[in-house]
Image 1: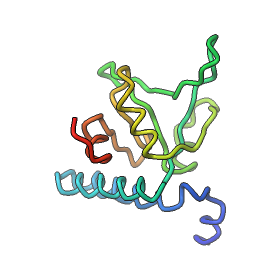
Image 2: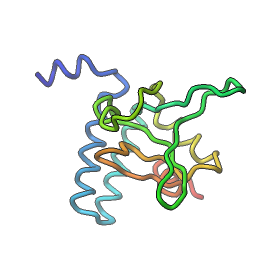
Image 3: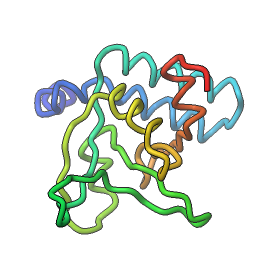
Image 4: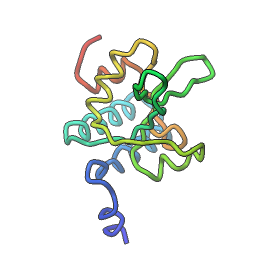
Length: 143
């Protein structure tokens, strides 16, 4: 049965279950060591040319497509990304347009947009909030 599921998963998403497992471990044991492990797993998937699912807003008057952002209780805006279609569907909100994007390209873009705080992976379940400092660590950059 599991093999059948893999066949129906986009190639760029195969292996993202490792990210989900690392996040679950971090949620169960919120230590610096588990955070470092989770960031390493995400970096490894990025280097394997792994992808995430991103939701986009319909174009406004300027014709530009914008990544969908969520606002947290503290008023900060975050892009959202999903490790798989099952995670995306857990939100249950309105149907949205989604695309696959390279993890590295998403993170590089996040560092350049002043209006956002970072990227939330799987905002509904198995969640990790990557602020720009954590994204820089994953990318191997100093900020």
